[in-house]
Length: 326
Image (cartoon, rainbow, N blue to C red; front, side):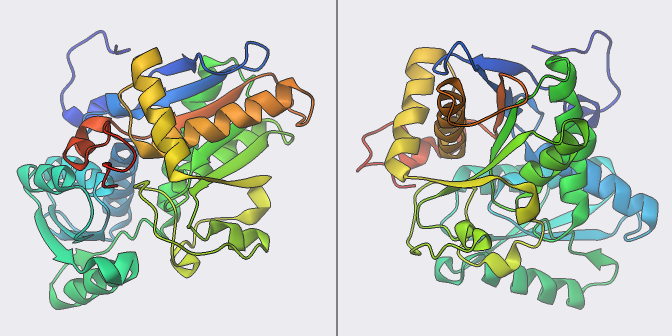
């Protein structure tokens, strides 16, 4: 599906305008709609920030043509930036913790980027530190730093959210999205609250993640299989604004895994674990709204399915929960 009816000049012209599709596991009284971000050219929501951030940084003079973009990333952001970098005359280097999807790392390399791995036990904090070290060693190099760069959230304020509101004629009752950097949710939430101050906003994380500490809770830290969302170090998640969030929902890996398999077998959505978690949370908000336990300004819930399950097949994403490597 595409909204484009004429030939385009560049792959960057295909970023955004992704379909918004009903999730049929949601109640009829309060339907859930999901933005299918695998329809982007790099097959994930991160294509939006790859294009938007690099274009703005070139415009501002943060980096010159021929310069090097260095980013710590779990993968999809790297692919999004790599798609944009070469088209905009930039070089790309990505620092990726070892445990993350090999498919994503292969795609980054195929797009002309250099991939540098850091130890899994150092997490994203270790990747961020290594990226900064590399930037200091090179001339005309910049770290966009998706975890702290306001352009990340601004990309979704400028593109994702307006597309959703246009599709639903402005009648959006709740916004639900997984939080890795939190850029997607923050951009959507800020736009939504400007249109309708009563919009319900729900942040989604895996059980074992520490986003709930922003709400004053004391969650128990643990490893989780769900990939692309969550945090073990909230100090790196500088974009998250608790004032824009009504609820932080932790979803168990098993529930996310059950839902991603249900979405495939029942609804034809080939999505990954972060989408499974988002769908669990979005359906829960919708069901509580339908029963009167949550008040929404409009009878609809929107969420984002960030990418495709195909990037996780080597980890057994459709096998049993015990066999899924995460």
